[in-house]
Length: 113
Image 1: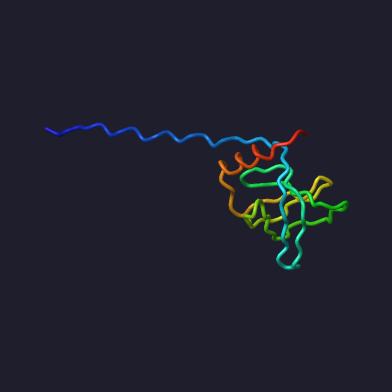
Image 2: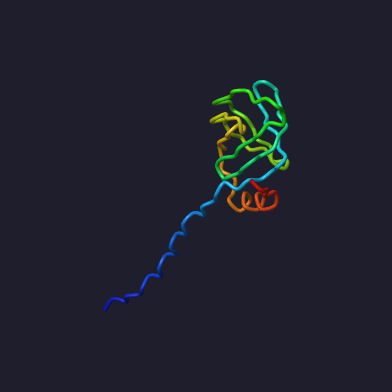
């Protein structure tokens, strides 16, 4: 007779945490390696895979597809500029920032609209 033991049920995958773009104000730098250029500014919203960086000047240069590093709280995050608007540079990270880190930073530096 065969011994039929039941296999334990595999844990069900949890749905990813959905984060909204909540306004924040995190002092940051945007580094352009090819041009040896550093822009001071703030992160206006932050998601694990994207951010909006606003340069701390009156003018925003039209940029797209530039490889950059976004330095947030002393940590460099390699990225690419995917769009420019009057609000700033939309950045896509090469490697997502952990969701827990994003939630912690945004909660700490949350602002009103």
